[in-house]
Image (cartoon, rainbow over all chains, first blue to last red; front, side, top):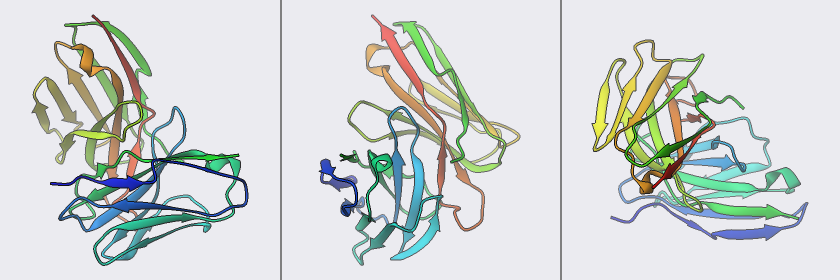
Length: 112
Length: 114
């Protein structure tokens, strides 16, 4: 059984640029959630997608957006990057919205 | 954003000792989960708890879902060097538009001396 995979593993961008992060969910999982983890902190919920629809959103501005595809893989897009967006971005999948979430190893995003 | 109160922040123990950490919240959660995160990796699920008062074990790990649904603890018995890492508690909302959302504690950094 393949787990959650994320790409790329590392990314360096400059302020004002746009970025797309990708996530392949675990086999059999229809729900994908995205989290931002700053250094030394616990992950913060960005949003969740269930069967291609946004199911809930945390306290992040609209420049954070997402997509879920028919195969349940997902993208996180961030526009107009700011220095504070530097963080580890984690994707988690689950077999339903209220089931335990399993995480990928994340994308480390650095903004210069 | 909202975070759970997790304690202690860090622990330094000798191999073979038992470890206890806990998490409290001002909000009720439907599910409590415990994760372990190693450097450069994502959190790995250790234990999931679904009912108030539930006590669940996974090998040397034991966790409990508090009766009030606002707290949980994790115990590790007979620690070994590979237990080193950051342990996070997470609560899953009971309802509302974000009921799939996990709210995490700040983490407990565990160091085990051989």
